[in-house]
Image (cartoon, rainbow, N blue to C red; front, side):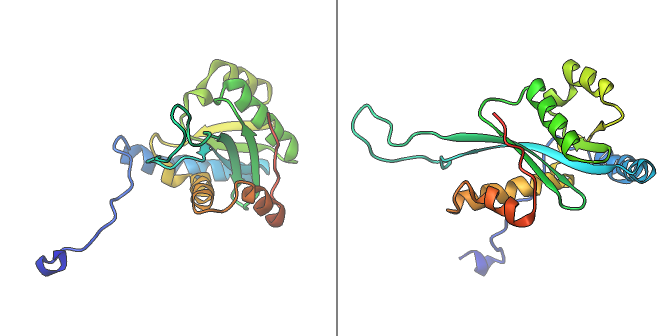
Length: 194
């Protein structure tokens, strides 16, 4: 029926409602080129970072179990990852929520695992802007520097695509440990965390 009236099935655009195109363009055409220039000048490596959570539940969970019992156990894993412009990957899996201390732990491991200065680009998660993080960054300013993408702009962060791919593979039936196998095969580093 829809074809007869000249309409076809379309996928909706995936764009954050609060996204500011002016800020996103400023990041892409001013901030990021300046980061690349700084990386060349300081012989630094650029990493893009992001956090994600994975669980074993579908969006519309329904099943059968004896009365009073849940039919499946909710399992959740969280991960922070970083990917360089050259494709080097680093991961830290954790069970609880992201905290400033956990973020610092990841940056410390990333810094130690990289033989050059790290220019780390992340989103605007509140944890990334915390006072404890800022103090730690001051102490490690020669080893790592933090930059922020424009707000609500996941499409400019390559690590978002890595996380999307991970979720698609897990929800399509590939075992959760596939990411570890993928990293071993691809030569990625895995930073095993608490």
